[in-house]
Image (cartoon, rainbow, N blue to C red; front, top):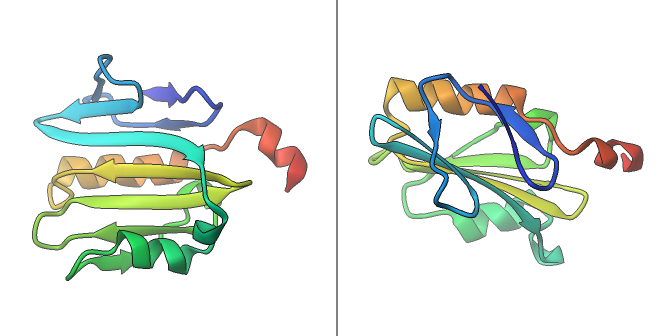
Length: 129
C-alpha cells in the first residue's frame, strides 16, 4: 500500500499495516507494532549523519547503514534488546525521520525494509540535486 506525506514524500508498506488517522504525522499499526514517519526542517548542526548518530544513540544501540530512498546521508539506529529503532535521513535541509517499535519481529522488519526501498523524496527536490 502506498502512502504520501504532506510535504510530497511517499513510500510503501505491506497491506497488513493500517494508517492511524488520529495523529498529525503518518502513523501506522500492525499487530500492536507501530511505525511513524515525519519530515521537518533540520538545524544545520544536525545535517551531518555523525551528529545525528550521537544525538539519537542510546546505550547499546546498533548503527546500521540504510540508504533511505537511496540517500547516502541516512542512518538507522536499533536497540537490540527491544528492537525499537529510528531511521534518520537529511536531504535539502529536511529531516526525514522514521520511528518503529518491535523491530525484532518479522512483520516490522519486512515493513521497514519495504519503506527503505520504496521511499521517494519530493520530486521538486530532484531539481536541486
